[in-house]
Image 1: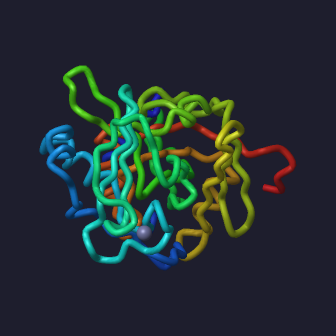
Image 2: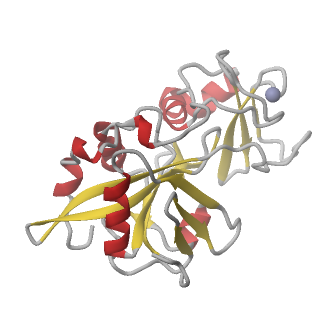
Length: 269
Ligand SMILES: [Zn+2]
């Protein structure tokens, strides 16, 4: 990433306590999707590869129709095909049966995200810059656990895409981030207990994570030093057990968008 190189990404060190779950308060854990209820049409549209792609990016927490917990039963996959792109979401089978809907008609509800869950984790990442360790505070965000946008690539394979509003806000693929040049469309707010970022355009989403536990002082120091936070967004992030290996594997996948976010003015720190 712009002069700081990737070397640091491969050597994220455990002393940053990213796997110390006591540092992060979470109420309900998402469950990785191992099995989804599908139809023949879904299977023929997605193919085995497309199904694997979705299973890796979807997390079975809340039903997108009723908002209730999806529980342990395999959720039903519902795909709304808008022809150039599609939305794939998880529901209770009894709330919305699995289907590939390319009728152009939506019944029951629109593709609103009223029941969409998101998660965020505050960490410090070691980058290397000019041979020296450069500690960067980062906010890792999974912006949608139970629903993702998919798009056909040039080989007609459905690939998960991160919502366009993140790109509009200035986030870019890792490797294209000017590290100290804040993106225009996001601001960060820091309190003693929490780091939050807010999109300045629709849908004006805010993502926040507590700062606490053994790594809290180090995270606060890094924020004070850099006056900003590295925002990293991916549907692959799983914060159930956020080990350095998992986080590195998400970076390596390339399926994330990132940008440097400056603190909003009038913040104390
Ligand atoms: Zn339901």
